[in-house]
Length: 294
Ligand code: NAD
Image 1 (cartoon, rainbow, N blue to C red):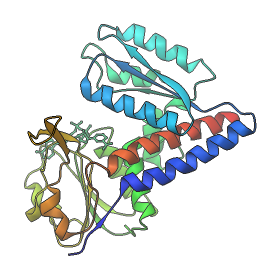
Image 2 (image 1 turned 135 degrees about the vertical axis):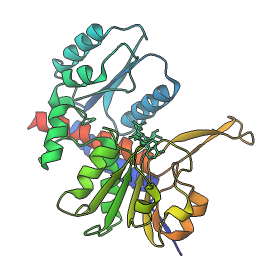
Image 3 (image 1 turned 135 degrees about the horizontal axis):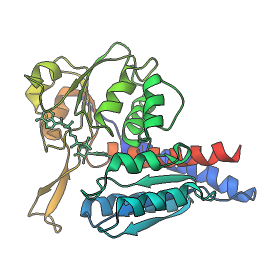
Image 4 (image 1 turned 120 degrees about the horizontal axis):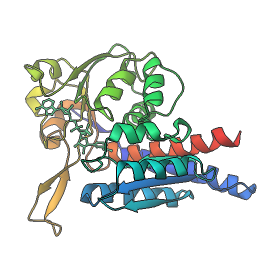
């Protein structure tokens, strides 16, 4: 089958250009720049890369803001105090706390301390609750980016069987929720599979859309996918590759080479969901800024 790439890189670049143009206009009119602060606790290498990428993209569209790098030994109390200070700082519009946090810190306690007005990651219980009710709120960046991508490609998801692999609070669960909501993209019949699902392939073989968010390299194989399915690969897995200078390469949760020929649409890794996640975070930050400016 002739498949089409769901090109997150190109789509995100277009959306970034729109944000940049809007920021330029704001600044031209004498407004201040939207600002995002990211807090990074500890030295997790993947988290450092993610935060650096987010910061770089924010600067590219003209946002202000910075990354607060805190030592691994930071206590929960100290972290919440910093969150409260940022909540009270009217020149910062969005605040994200990069996960995972060191083991001695309860992530839910920290997320709950973020002001819902600045919760541009959409992880606060208020944001999650509103999303569940279909009310206007900040949506978590990865599911939001996937919804935007499906919309940009004008995919009519109504009535489709959708299987979401993974039930995390940041990807799988909100994804399943959004795809089941009324509207396009949405109106799907959603099944959420996870590590305790029995005979998982039975579900994926019936799926018109598969969203894979497990964190297992090449988990979804060709025999798990029906002809013409739409595949969204969220996974970012680093696997050894001696032919590369770095010694590794990034692969998704889907065996792209084997699965793509069976699909109607598929996201590549890298260049699919990743860039859409970052641009969604920027859209949320601009939204937080505008809500305050009005
Ligand atoms: P997570 O570890 O929190 O959740 C993984 C989920 O997969 C769990 O719910 C678990 O039940 C399920 N799972 C594990 N093994 C399974 C199995 N054998 N069969 C069925 N289900 C199984 O991970 P996460 O934070 O949701 O992230 C998932 C992947 O997406 C990771 O590779 C992560 O790096 C990537 N990710 C990418 C982006 C992006 O922007 N592209 C954003 C967030 C996460």
